[in-house]
Length: 466
Image 1: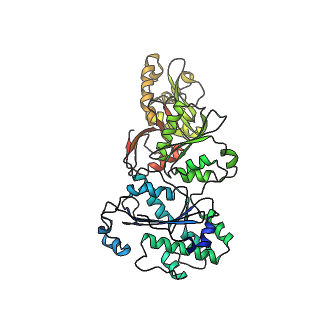
Image 2: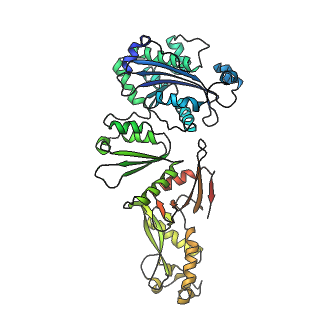
Image 3: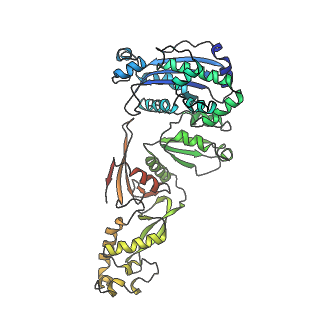
């Protein structure tokens, strides 16, 4: 339900100060079944909304669709019986979302409320993100002489009038928090008080130089993974950005020096949701297939096998460019010297002729004395014309086992990404820190080696192919 709005006279100075900010302000509190972001659910929501001097109050009891423990009932006063006939979060989401989207969300320990809201909206099928200010941080900035900044300490310090039965209820805590904002404004220079807001608001609010249609679009983005496509008038190729926290990262990007010159002439933006940052890169690869772009030089190297004029495969260390690769990369190396050393060790391990492979890259091939044959460790028959096919087959069979920088013994993977909120999954086929595409081509980006290394720390959904 939504309660009637209190009169603006309750906080006239606060309402006037907040009206100078570039966005409306929503003071928010949630009650939940517990503190686990994935397992627990919301039981109550309260919002006090400030917009251009106007104040409105909104509150709902929410059926969490799971039992409320006796401990939580004792803490909040919210019982299973109270929420039995209450709407579920998905039912209130259409009314709640406009009260928060495009607002500065203010909460005590705002990460808690912000994370719960993002997850609940995602379960209900709505994208949500908002600039957020944590009043714990604001209290620390304004009152550094105090060691405690939890809400109970603030209530005691300011002598705020809140009944025991209203503490740990969403609206009671929102009203107490608003009283704190009001009193802290009165006790401090108003401009200094306001100066803390852009410093403490994370994610940032969007800059005023951004065209209004883009601002509205970006405020509707989620703070989750995806690919953003930025179209610029007069440019044939759009800018592609991959994200694991789309709104936060774009908001930070637009705060950088020179961002106005770089982005304010953007014509439009398209956002494609992803299940993870790796999936966002796979979506970028799919986009590049239909919108080709010139590959960009990367800081990594791989091995390629090319036939000499006799048809024998030789090894070459080549740069691994960002973008679409027509063939699979074999091995991943940070430096050509490391690649040549690894190729020599790999050839020895798999009994491949280093002279035919021309690992040194001198172009000697068959004219180069073979150190293995010279040491009488092989007959040298591999150089005979009738052994070309045997040599090539052996090379191609062993090529996928070339080392991959930072992957250890894992050369190729099947990696399944899973979104627990939507239940969606996607399986990526990966080798040498590149992603295989549906048509057999491969995609590589400078960021992928680090992302795969991080992903390998979580073994769930990973199948080692070789």
